[in-house]
Length: 87
Image (cartoon, rainbow, N blue to C red; front, side, top):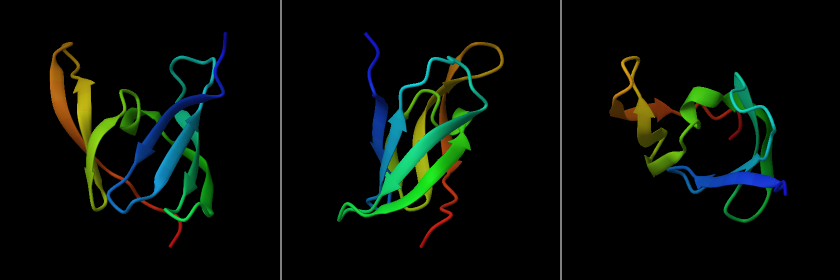
């Protein structure tokens, strides 16, 4: 069974990021729809997959925090800046 939504995340500004399910396990960019807290769609487009590959566990302002594997295979804490193409 395939699901329509792969993940839902909230950034540090209260915006809701909805990632649809895609069959490609390692795409370069991920499709996303971004909504305001009031439900208005602010953006539909692509984000870099590395910033959402394992999902983020926390967000503060423009930064999101999560875990990722380093080049040698060890887990590490990561921080990414979300550049919002909307106001």
